[in-house]
Length: 417
Image (cartoon, rainbow, N blue to C red; front, top):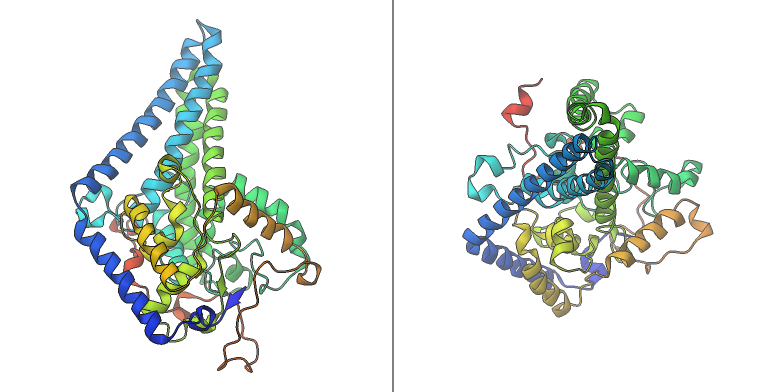
């Protein structure tokens, strides 16, 4: 459901909302003041493990294909092991390292190798475009209809407030395709296909972005399906298939984790009215209401980029991800104190609810019932006519909040124009 006023929805007074903001600011300050050697060791260890897994995967595949000429029974297990190592490396790089580095979580280290302005991740979308579509648009306007392009990624209907069209009858199929080709779907995300369809996209900017995507996508294809397979000689096809398997595993895993963050029951949507004169404390509150966590052990959280703590990530996107577990204890206590919903559950249940929503919203609203209670009406807007919920351009959006992470273009990105 879509909320027009988070204060009314939570039945909190203005002073209570502002006090929540002050308490969350105190949590932020505590973590910032305590960042140190242990955090530096953590991210360096993650990078070392990721690079070790990637190297092990590539070397195991090469050794298996060349050694298979002399011991044929070795080749298939080597390819399976190599694809597994490589898939884990890609997941770790995308989820716990690349995504979080580009949020600026480690910029405080002043290490140019682990800095949001320099990191280019192992996926098809250029880092610059990701930082714009994700750090700015998604994190600032989380689940706001007409602003947050992550609501359905331009191809799925994920809110009952989105107008139904017969196109959405194929939504279960589109969803399966998106999951399978997730890195390529993400690569096109910042283009904003809806604005292109409506002729609202600046042609020069679209051309610039397409050139970036082509260069990045070409390099990914050459690396995984030309260069490394060629090193295997006659067995290049087997290595290409193993690399495709690694990419598929990364795509499916990333898709599941990301969809568990904002589409399970309890993760709310918001109307444009909520953005009007929104204070920092109200922004905090919207992040809590618009996100959902999932439960798991340390390994699951590392492999999911610590996005099992999606609420904490949205509250503090530029704080080190390895600190989200301890932050979650304080955030949950705060939510209990003020009787604010804190959405969490097992991973399988969270994804199951997201999948159910995808299927239900493929048909008209009149055919199904909502799983959420009706939101309270906002008194000062209740009698206003419906507003245009079309996608907004950057010029129509609010200025960026600094804590969301940078999205300006780096010198390396500008040099390619």
